[in-house]
Image (tube, rainbow, N blue to C red; front, top):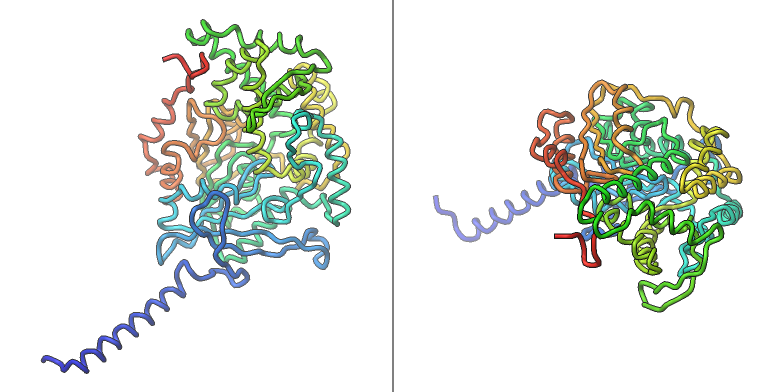
Amino acid sequence: MIEGNGRARARRRAARVALAAAATLLASCSNDAPRGDRLALADCRLPRLATAAQCATLDVPEDRGRPGGRTIGLHVAVLRANTLSPKPDPLLILAGGPGQAASSLAAFASRLVEVRRTRDIVLVDQRGTGRSAPLDCAAFEPGDDADEALDVDPLPKARACVAELAARGVDLAHYTTAAWIADLEAVREALGVAKWNLWGGSYGSRVALEYVRRHPGRVRSAILDGVAPPSMRISLDVWRTRERALEAVFAACRDAPACAASRADPAATLEALRASLGPAGREVVVAEPRTGVTQTVTLTFDALLAGLHPLTYVPELAGLIPAILARAADGDFAPLFATAQLVGSDLAEQVDVALHYAVTCAEDAPRVTAGERAALAALRAGRLARAALDVCDVWPRGDAADGHATPVASDLPILMLSGALDPVTPPAYAEEVGRTLANHRHVVAAGYGHIVSPHACGPRLVAAFVDRAGFDTLPSACIERFANAKRPPLWTGRLGPAP
């Protein structure tokens, strides 16, 4: 039967109202609605993220032993799944450092598009970092003065920072991994999440392991990238592994005909620079990278090493080291200064130094023996290592959780990723962790450095694992690509590697 125009319009209006009501009902169950009853998530912006996230602040006690005492706000950000019916177990991103805020990894999280097809991604800034009551202090703020940038003695700055934070009422003894685990449980409950998947990078992998130890029933799966075993003492062990990474770069130059032909032995060049700079350093002239203005600075051998070590984290930057040393030996320190400033400024933006010391002075430095401390003199960077440990002699020390340095035993599905060229968490560390994990797989990316997931097909590998919480559908072509990757070529001239 054909209806009249008025009746047809009425039916269409009724249909639109019904559809709108249905859409409203769906929206109330969709990714636009808060899923917990304690967090009112609202649109927000995160660093280097083009689209809006959903954020909220969760207040927690600074000291859980004094519930009525000082509170701090935890910054919680959620990248919503691209579906109206997301899976109930989101992916939680645990940042590294210690001292890195998870919000600084928003750009990486946004690349996990296949994960976000079905799941939310949650980023929580660790207490003391980012927007979670950051432990900012003037002493550790990066400055524009070149001589200040080359000052590698952290002890005076640490004393000033401790005094400043104490004057603000901050109790540094409660900025530990144990407190962070308790914070994560509070966030999980506030979000109404029964279980979540974990991605932990570097120190974040240590946090993930500790969370698995303390709350195994709240974890569906875990990805550990750049695996930091519980036994690792960040305050000590990174100096040894960085030294080996630097030696590996020197060996790669000797083994590459183009590098060996165009560069003197970089290890010998470094030793010649040590002799040239002397115990107290000497004045050198450099051009300020941003302005081109020349200035005279006092460069010590320790400052030179402090500029080289961060380059080993990224193989493409490590490939510059022989050329940087050759230029420095010729009296041109501008490439060293420019590259170190580039990397250093990025680290200063992302890492809260005070939180780093709060964690490592409580959990790592106490496990360094007097003999091991004395043995640091044999390392090129021995004075840098001892200076970092000296900070812990004046830093307020919190309590580490019982058994925090012991292996974690679990039968949860755990995927571990390692860069073969990683200078701080080499593949051997993942092998150590894997001995007590009954259900794990370890993928080593040859030719890659610290943190593998963001590179090449890494996001697809992460998504495949999280989707099934298992290894049966991991993309074999991706694993093969990582396994066969080569070290980036070393720079043999001012314009790049030899063809």
